[in-house]
Image (cartoon, rainbow over all chains, first blue to last red; front, side, top):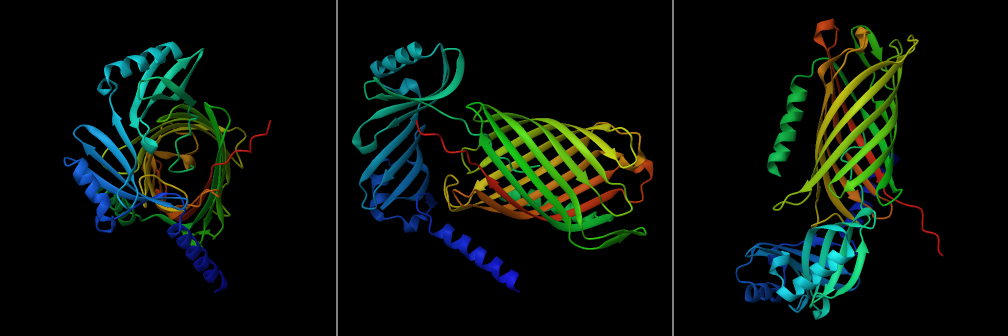
Length: 174
Length: 257
């Protein structure tokens, strides 16, 4: 009896912890999304499809994240509940960038790595400052690695980070 | 997603419907820790204990409720890319089904490849695992270890239940089915397995606690098939268990310079 009580209390604790998470995205139903957030999407991306909404809480700030496809590109928008935009992320191809920006990025990548393969190109604008994030698998010196390289809106290098790979989570330990 | 659930339900129903031989019910506490060795290598330590929860009797043999198996598996993981890992291990396994049956201890080197991918329209990640095992088995009466080999293929799917990705303090589902193929038969008839020798099916619900790792609970069905050619009284063993798995992923804190 005492054991059952303990199991029940542990379950309640886990449930409560799950419901009161502090920093994560959560699925949210369309009817629970503020009208200002939905209006922003409709006004700026009328052709958006495959739309999904998430509620994200970072510290004291609540955001609404919208993921969708617009024409061929994948978009991620982060908005305040009153409909003001905080950040836009667009997954795109390198050849969609302005020619001079693309040339600068390619020139830098060629100088930085002896070999490289582009895995992802993203246009970001956190707090209104546009930048590009390029994820590459590259050979640097004598070794291969996974890198995230950041450029400003003109394609000038700003930052490089090496990704530390995580092993694939196992579905079973056996 | 519905199709995956339906497939798993059908598999489970099929296993239950044809189960006519040795049937055991139990629980399986297990622990897994993964840590970083370098940018390219991780290590994993996995251990489990299989308990039979009820006394059983088949063909005049008693199978008391007891510890059936102890499994200790350290492994080294090579992270070729975010989607492709290779691993090797030297595993230890101890089994004993009943007081009159021979126990066996086993050293099990294995090599595996895991490929994982996401889908564009649905959440979660699917993984495919292919493992080749060399089982070096020794019973109480054997003077040498006998070698048998297995090829295993596992298809798994893990899906976050509360957002795009699995964050701290969120629930998730984990499911897999694994097929075992016995590639060799040892001389001793009691150890002879069918070519399609085992099938494991699992569906678990998990919770990511954050710093303390993930806790997962769910039913695991293990079906083991013996070769009918050698005339075993029981050609099939069905083990239905409740698995409780604790998964951690921590590294020692970095020294401050």
